[in-house]
Length: 92
Image (cartoon, rainbow, N blue to C red; front, side, top):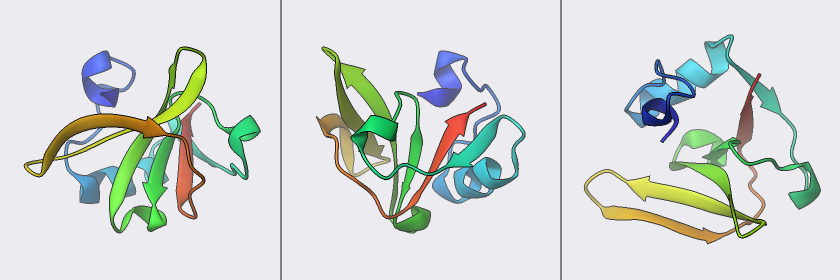
């Protein structure tokens, strides 16, 4: 979504590359999100520091949700927002 929307055309396709890209890119910054009030649509979340999954915060009908998908495993879905212990990155 990040890449094809034009927000960041350089955003890598594969998870391993995405993690290092977010950490080193001058387009993204790591932010602290302790609760829903600090979350923003477009935030990229590395679940468990990215060891398992990456997701994006989206807004649907004014409510924050989590959008995610797995290549080859399942189609994308949008679920309820939940806190993560992983890192969160935000477009500068």
